[in-house]
Length: 186
Image (cartoon, rainbow, N blue to C red; front, side):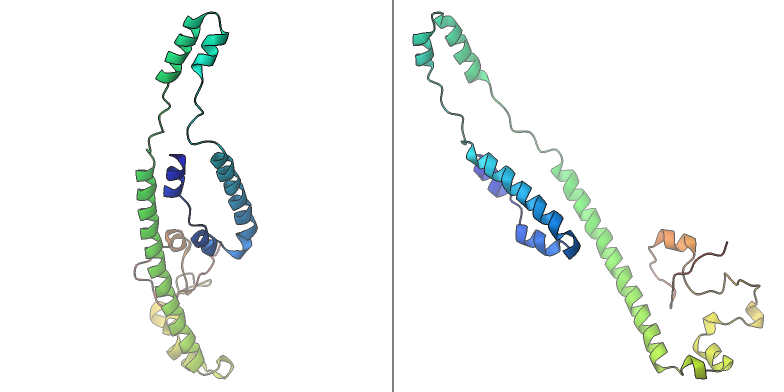
């Protein structure tokens, strides 16, 4: 009975090992060793308790009613297997985590595409040490202060990147192009 329960809920250690980063391999090995130790200890016990020879006790004990009462009480004892009340919650949390991970992957792919566009822009543009201010303004129109959108130093509105609030949200559906994280001015 216990062996069926263990094989039913067995962990796929090979898959688990593939998911563990290199920096955590030692902790993973210790965890697996401890788990294997518990499994060996549990498997060393018999599946069912050994039967009690009540007749031997009746032959040696003078008060046979005590043995009969103990036998009756022993047979009446039943240790129920605990009900699984958390699997549904864990499954729900797993689905929610998968959804969050998928959203993050989508957001990350968007950021990678933005970075690739910006990298391509840097590869094909004139080297910055040979670039005039006009060429810079044509290459990076969002990064240039113009008369129609003038600002005062330190120009927090015109700096490229995410603001402190935007970084806290960290979930941008349609992020602005060429976003680079910047620090807020005091």
